[in-house]
Image (cartoon, rainbow, N blue to C red; front, side, top):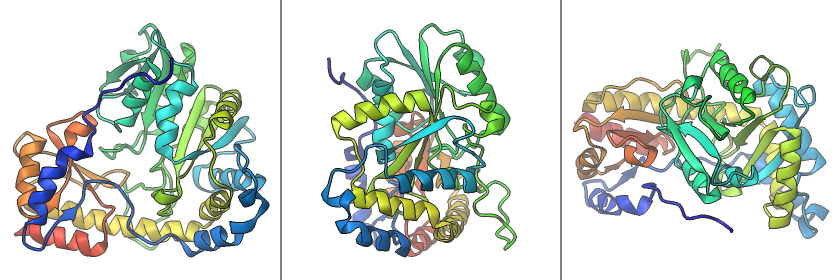
Length: 382
């Protein structure tokens, strides 16, 4: 039947009028809405891309499953940053053309249909719902996916979305809560879909000390204590967009249950969802260049700190998020659009909480330059 229709409030054209107001403000517009990186791509990545520009994997068709080097780099990255041994838990991997594509196609690649239910958090990344709608399946939104009683006995549950650290709220799940989700999903034969795209962006307990480990990642659904030593029924998604500023490269992957990955890879090959060969080489370089990840981590920690302080000065009640790259606040007026209008008058554009299922909130992104964040802080403090 092909893709089914979808409906969503997630439409960036809805903030066009607010941007016009912001552009007319003194000093112009500061856009803190979209989480698009602004910092340089690491030198290691650009060099790898150039070197691979005329490799056999460039002038010939690239491998859907990824080159041997890319697959090795993904395994190394899991071991170095996520305390996960993919081979030991019988997990496989497949690269995706950015994480959004992976999310949007997930329900379809799992063969979800009209009698199937996909569980997701009420406040979440909109593409979870859109992807489920595209597959023609039913969406079940719950307050907290870790409250397994809210979905375990619902007929037809085929998959459960987990997002930790969360976009937009910054919430981070403990290993114990994630293990509970995995165990409950297995009991009913559902697949856990763990979106961990912000895994290396953890701020809980950060002290800005030189002793801090910037790559102390959040719990992974494929970690042995979470998945009970087996990747069965678990899929993890990750992207290099934030850790390495590679959003334009469209570099991400799915890792987990080898039987599910094999099936997805076969379909992806037939529909041409394949990362270009030179980009695969660049992706491998980005995964191995953990020093550049540490530099980017420090940038985001500083920007988030400045932004949190400025939003407090403006009257929002907020703290440093536990993870991810956003400051999630309750609208002072009680309505995101009213606050959007007031913020636009001083040139600042946030993201309306209605996009994520919470019209009483707003999201401010730290993926802006140091200068933009500093300017926003000055305006918010006036």
